[in-house]
Image 1: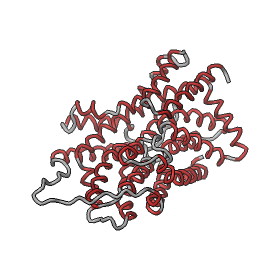
Image 2: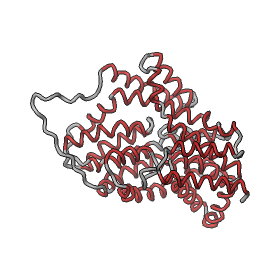
Image 3: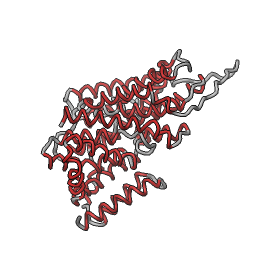
Length: 422
């Protein structure tokens, strides 16, 4: 290893340790690492700023703006109320199926984080009214939206970032449904697992049934008809944009930017709401992580890691190489965040593909899926953090229900990529 490689690897290890301590906000930890790389001369100013103009980063921000309109409209609340109407506490498995299958489908076309943020209070309120244990539903909700997000290009920020980095490297990015070849099987497997086994491994926290008093103030559900109409307009425009992208008529960034402009022109969206809805912390984290990933490539560290991983895995065959790449990416995800893991691992995966002489898209698919598939800890993915903070889960709850799912998803992903993609 050169002195620059030692410096970059030491900085990344320190960054991971600080993230694990969880005393400071993740976006500022990664941003400070980027500043150190800039001040030390490892990165030039334009290289350090590359992540802030990345196509995937801008697409993420615009999708959150559209999702914010839908969230504020109350459309999702009404949908959940209809899905669970008439359901009782008798069969948790039935509730899991009625709620989680549609949630997984929705997260394929809407970013999964806003979906979970919107659904958690609605589900908790329903559970409280009907005496159902909310702890049986919320971790499964997070897991299936993560899996559903792997089906399309826009389902999760990880897919968008990897796609943006591939295009930045002048390679072919993902097609809109290209990831579905892996995303659909793992989503189906995940739904079956949480419906039959997963919810049983979670603790019981039965909510008390609330009594309704006569003459009491009726609980207001949903929002005004005008707001709900705004939500349906946003959904319709997003659906049209997705259709155009899927047909290959317009790029993703152009499509979602056009939707935001149309929402502003139609007065469905206000400029002030745009500023408040943009997830600045996520955009700073993603943009900074891209710079750190670039430093790995520029310093030669990515090549060094790729060579040593291949030295261990390659003699065991291509399937072992794919599993090793998945495991390394997934470990980074559980320790840091999904986007940071994807950005750090993509240069390694591309170098491994170059050395082996295989199509790099297959390895990019493995990294995108493995970076999203955070089930063992609450810190690896935003949706896990949302339910962790909302419901009083313990860290070990994620380990108990998430570890078997993580193993199954790894095997299915590696098998599909081995037989179909690579």
